[in-house]
Length: 251
Image (cartoon, rainbow, N blue to C red; front, side, top):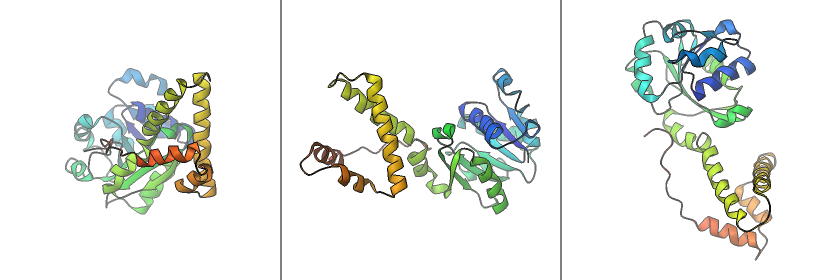
């Protein structure tokens, strides 16, 4: 099986190196192209450096990792060289299957990894159009498992799914950044130690809940003793009226 990647930005780069290191794809079967060829010099040892059309022509599974504004022009450039049985994989979740098929008619999937793929703990979202076979799904899932877990969703649920797993590292980081900054004004504990204390507690709490099958409410009840500071603090948090966030995934 030959894998192609068009676009060597942060996502394309992560795909290339993960596939090479963790999915066992040999250099002869891994193709990559990018608008700025100089960026690909570091990839020469692990992949075939090619143009968009050559990459598309060779690939059995082709990942397109370009900006939404460039997506249509890339499809128009490669549509006459794509293999009939190629699986086209879009990393742009906001572009619908319907829009893609107006330009090129091929089996198509959409994939949304999380930043946590860098440590092999992504919950990678995937959806498929009606043309994708079970064999195609198995092949793509096998590749994506080098990032972590793979979760299949209907196309219409990819937006909320993205907010829950792909956007969530940013949401979590911003929340705990606020907490750590607030703590600095009330303690002589060094900033870096505050951050490590919070990060390790956050990570351990998640592992505890997963391993013990605990709910959020159960964790609160275990920690929040009657009349204590935790009980008061959690009550305040539950009473917060959070605004609806702007969607990080599509319109």
